[in-house]
Image (cartoon, rainbow, N blue to C red):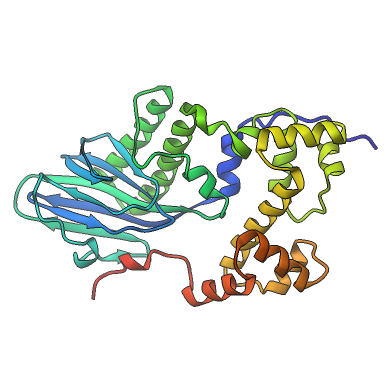
Length: 327
């Protein structure tokens, strides 16, 4: 039976963000009175966001100072340490030393500072669960400020909703804020990547190709399938040779190299959950023996599959433990 004709991936970035799965790790609603300051330590693998809902502050990141006003959103994508304070020179202790009751494991309430004018903020840290997310997040600069644009208007709508919940929220407002914050981060990342010509390269850019994008989406949705160049070419409704050449041109590596790498990145994601054994993951991804899977995993990932699983089991449920409530 001939393969179904390909269709363009309607929302390439949406497809990527869905596959890479964003997980909220820590959220904080802050009421800060001048003078105040706090240092957020480096948190590798996390993307930080900061929203001022009233008042204002200064953010120092990567050696530069930025003034934040109400209705502004800033991302610190690479988990770098940074400082928030009411004015230059104000002491900024480590946030871990400032009491902040944690509700439900990942939402904190922070009240800090002197007896001066107040600033209200919503801050948080998120992770993209899939290891391939590094490719996406690495495309972002060290600090992202949302600029005015048609997409920015949607961001402003979300910011207004967050501000309303902070100022007037009733029961359940913390849950509403966390969900709005997740939407806000996705909107900001999407807007930044769409505005950056450099983002339309590699697998992320290739998703927009009418034929190669269809094959990539199929691999992302079912990495466990027994893919070959022939079956991928059929999925894209191309000849085997034309598909192989076009895939390498757009993605930057041969199709089967990409399939193996994506499959192993997905295996890292599964093993990092701590529930599945290496043997179970090997079977899930179609390997006839655990040894064959282990060899492929170590070659692509650079460390043994068993070590990844043991590290996940030792760590326990995902979370940003460094921000647990001080004792």
